[in-house]
Image 1 (cartoon, helix red, strand yellow):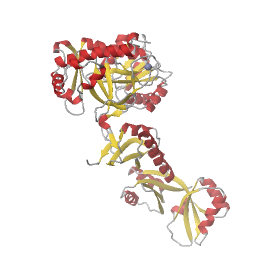
Image 2 (cartoon, each protein chain N blue to C red):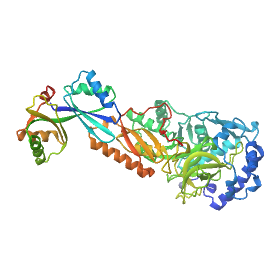
Image 3 (cartoon, rainbow over the protein chains, first blue to last red):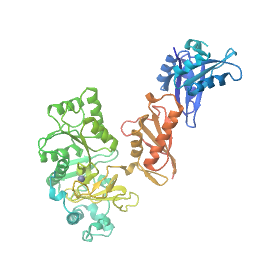
Image 4 (cartoon, rainbow over the protein chains, first blue to last red):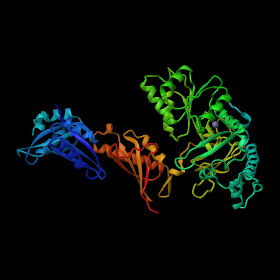
Length: 143
Length: 430
Ligand SMILES: [Zn+2]
């Protein structure tokens, strides 16, 4: 199973972000990772949650504009250059990284990074080939 | 194909002579029989004999829809009540309606104009016209009905609504021609699609006349393509008989306005100054051939322009463009006149946005256009949204020549109102 990410369209309206987080809290959904892509007028909130289908359902019900998409989660050694080497090997394989963000760390030995590449399967293949730890959805949601 | 070839192809010179003759008659008739005009003439210190050329029409007072309301019900009548045979009213959203009367001759003359329009678009005996406009106080259906009977086609007085029955009528009686509003035509298309009907195979449709609501060229193309028919623009208003004032010929490039029955002027709605052919402004119409209710220089509030040049079909009556907007809706930003319909047209061409929109005016040099994105097309990518916003901004700018600020909104943010939506929010103070 691919790791699923939930994206939310947020117009620049105060309180809309907290409303979204509120909806998730009320549905008892824990947020594993979160990132906001922002322009001057609107933002996109990206979330990794243990139960993406449920999150999508409750958010849609609360009239949010939601999109579910596949992402890659990798474990990166928490040392200088760890992330850079992952990005370099994707670039070398001619795979474009659209965006990325890091997980909330728990253990401290490995950082978890969420990547969105233009082709998820090619991205995974290249990473695995180079020996990078690609995490399964179970690994990620259970963190 | 012509209904009255001699008058439709009349030379400009003969047409203008005829217009002047009829204008003089109309002015005398209005002055003599309608106190409203007599009063206004004396205020302007003019008399019917001061009208000696067509240009003199500019000396005459305007008539507004407020005037028609104020003199409701009989105040604008130029004949006795015994002479009128038909009444139509045109209701505004507020206040009193306008009463429009026809004598027997007026009914016949309005039908003659429709007959010209039908023949002009290729209708002949044997055609079947399904009239899907509202019958009743509104002029749209009845005036078309009389004109079609005059031509000798079979008229199905279907009226609007009950779409499944409409479809059955079309199939049973092999309807060739529709008279319909653009929004109903679009709805009809959806129903046919859902029923799995093929407009080309299962029907005998050849053409449709669309009127009574403004609509865009894109909508025309869409309807033509779906039904495999020719769609012709029709323009009219109750105060001027109803449909048949101006109509497209088979060139589909502007509507011939029947200048032997009406004098048209295009004016600057603010100053009242006449605009030259080709420039857009408010259409002002004077009836030339009516008994019950001659109306001088009626402010239609419709924005259009007179198309310069001759039409390939050979008719000498000048054409007007499709209605660009209504003066009531006009807004001014950075000194440019803008109609919400122009913005609407742009948005209709952008897939990823819904058709609900709002224009917010906060100052005299900035406008904000707020549009909702389509839920299904949201893909979670920032650059797609930025591109979408830039695309809309650029498209609107090239349409209205003012660069708007475009805000993308979540679907369902803008209020959905029953009936007429509030499109413009003007926060400016004078
Ligand atoms: Zn023509």
